Image (cartoon, rainbow, N blue to C red; front, side, top):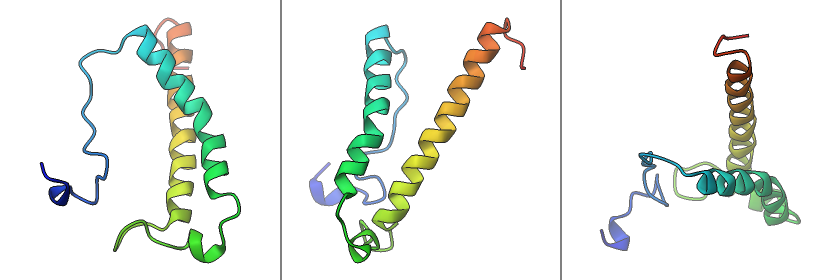
Length: 95
C-alpha cells in the first residue's frame, strides 16, 4: 500500500488481534501502558489552547479530544483488567 493510499482514519493501520501473546510481549505491553500517561503529559505540556483545539486530520478529533479519549481508554482498560483478575481470583465467578 502506497503512503497516499493510507486511510487517514487509521494512521497506524487497522488493529489486528495476534493469535497469541507471549509473557514477554505482555510485560512489554504493560510497561508501555504504564509509561504512556507521562509521555502524553510531556507531549502536550506547554501547548496553547489553540494548539490543543487543532484536529489531527480534516474532520478528525482535536488534540484535546484525543488526549481525553486516551485517558478514558486507559481507565476502561484498567477496570476490565481488574475485573478479569478479580474473576480469576474468585475461581471464574463474577464478583
